[in-house]
Length: 344
Image (tube, rainbow, N blue to C red; front, side, top):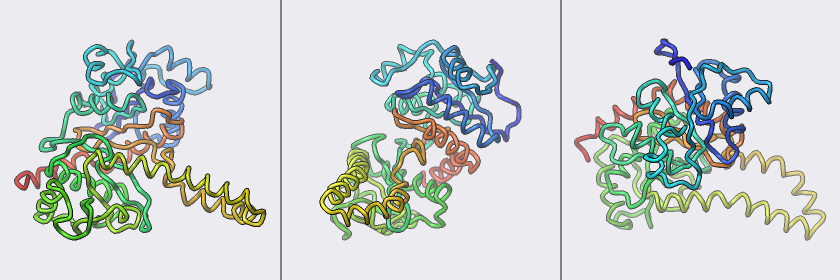
C-alpha cells in the first residue's frame, strides 16, 4: 500500500469500508461512486483487504489495490466505544482516525458504530484548540429553507461555553456549506423573552450578546420549522429528541394520506396528483441526500453516517467531506474559536 500523494492541494479522503449494517458492500460502492463523480480527490479504503476486493471485483469496478489500508479488526455496531479503542487497535475505525491525526488524510468517513466514531474523532484526531466539546448538527427543513440545529446528540448536559461554541461553529457551517450570508443565531428556550430559559441558556445568551455573531435572542421549538433563525443551539439531550421527532414526521404524513385516500375515491385521485410534489418537498428530510453529519470541533474532517447507509448515502458523505476540505472549514472554525477565546 502506497502513502498518499505529495500534492498538498489534493484532498485525501479515507472511507471506513467495514462501517455500517451492509459493509463492506455499501461502503465500497458508495465511495467508488463518489470517486467516479468527482476525480478531484484521492480515495483510500480502510478495512479487510480481501473483503474490499471481493466487492470491487464482483461489481466489475476498478480501484487501485495500493490504496487499500488493510486492517484485521472490526468495531461492531454493538461494541462499547471506549473499550473498543483499547481492545481493537487494528480496527478500521481506529486506523482511519490515525491517518487523519497523522496528516496522511484530510477526512474520515464512516457509517459504523456512531459512539466509536465520535470517540476516535475526539480522542485520536483530537479537538481544535479551544473547543470544549465537538458537536453534530441536523439540517431541519424550515419555511426559509434550512435551520441548522446544534447539538443533536454528540453530548448532553452542556455548559454555556459549549452552546456558544456550537453557535460559532454552526454559523460557519451554515455560511460555508449552506450559502447563508450572515446566519442568524437563536438559543432554544421556553419563550422568546429574556428570562424564559434555564441557567445554561441564559448564560449562553449573555455570551452571544458579546459576540459578533448575528444573534437574535431566544427562540421556541416552533421557530425551528418556522424559519426564525438559521442556526439554533441547544443541549444535545434536547436536540436529539427534536431530531428523532422530526424524523417521524414523513412516516406520519404518509400514514395520514393513506387513511384519507382509503375513505374517498376523489381524495385518492387528488393525493395521487400531489404525490410527486410531496415527495420533492420532503426530499430535504431524506438522510441519503446529505449522507451523514460532520462532527464539528475536531482537528480534521469527520463525517458520521447512519448504520443503514445506502451506497447513495455513502457517496454523498464522501462528496460532503470533499466540499468541506475545499472550503477550508477546519481552519475557519479554528480561527473563529481562537477569536473568541477570551470571551468564554
